[in-house]
Structure formats: C-alpha cells, structure tokens
Length: 101
Image 1 (cartoon, rainbow, N blue to C red):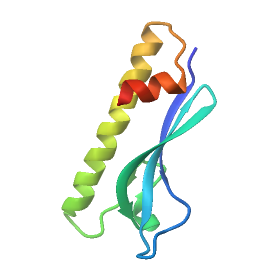
Image 2: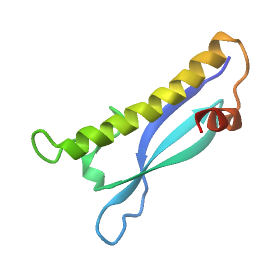
Image 3: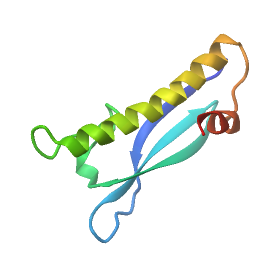
C-alpha cells in the first residue's frame, strides 16, 4: 500500500525583499520531493496546517489566485495518488513527479 502526502512549505531562507519561495513537499512511501511553485510571499502569510495562504487584506485577489494555483497542484497530485491506490500499483516518487508534469 502506498503512503502518500502533500504539504505546502516555505523555503527556510527568505530573499532580500523578505519574501520566501513556496513549494509543495511530496511524500511517497517515505521518499520526499519538492515541487517549486514560483510563488514568493512572506512566511507569515502561509498557513501550513491548511495548505493555503492567508490574505493580506479583505478580498485579496492575489491570495485567492495563489490559493487556486496551490489547490490545483495538490489536486493533480491527489489524483495520481488515487489512481495508483485504486490500481493497487506501488507508486514511486519518480512516477508521481512524471505523472504530474
């Protein structure tokens, strides 16, 4: 059985402007892989527990758009996880990354 998970994470070292790179951390059977999202924000705006971003202000369109990007990428990965789970195939981290691209 495959043991899989996806987490939204922040790069440890922020850039000079104070923003940090966001990435998805994929775990498949104990193997880890990062997928960079090309989204740069202050770490305080990242809700790691909910795998999404906090708005800077009410009706923050940038936050809504970025959360949509994150949810789409997580959805693609979850679809790969489900397909492999239903087919009873053992999923590798490489298969997961190739299937997402």
